[in-house]
Image 1 (cartoon, protein in one colour):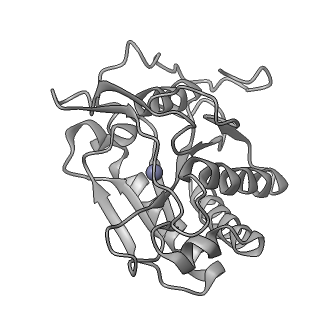
Image 2 (image 1 turned 180 degrees about the vertical axis):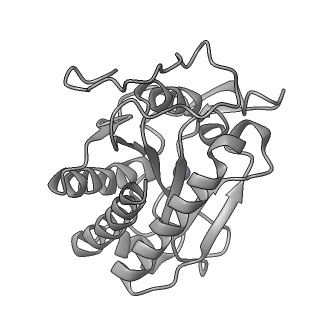
Length: 238
Ligand SMILES: [Zn+2]
């Protein structure tokens, strides 16, 4: 997975497989960002451990929600915004790698975390869209690994910091407050991560207005710019 141009850091980087669960991997490449566009065309319901500290399992990767008005599947929207974010980061000279650039993949949430661990990414940004039983629920939010979860303790503080910067970036670029930050201990993609990680829920596909807005090209660019601003600030602070 490592790019041939990547410069190895002077320090020894333990391999992801040999490393104990609660470990913070030293970034191998300076400021490499991994973007994980959530879901894929066909979900995979095979069980997978939710984290290294639990016997609990979840589907490897679900198929996500769908736009109530656009009828667009979440995996399509996630990739649209992720590709804009990739372009925005590259424009700013920030190296980027992606867990997927097509819909026809089969990569579980643990495998996505492993990809970032193997790359030694400085930050993982997962892009998702939300769904709710109430059509009126709307707004973006940013999720980060709960500091009470043992497996993610080594990355909790940095992940929380990144999440705050992503939220501020989105608030600035969209001119809306959103729903704020949320600590989560139940996401496989967080619990297997050994590098800082945050997940942006860009809005609710179950809200008709927000569903349409999230497919608007200008609004997508605002989302990408705001997230990129947050990422840039996080990297500059390292
Ligand atoms: Zn999702």
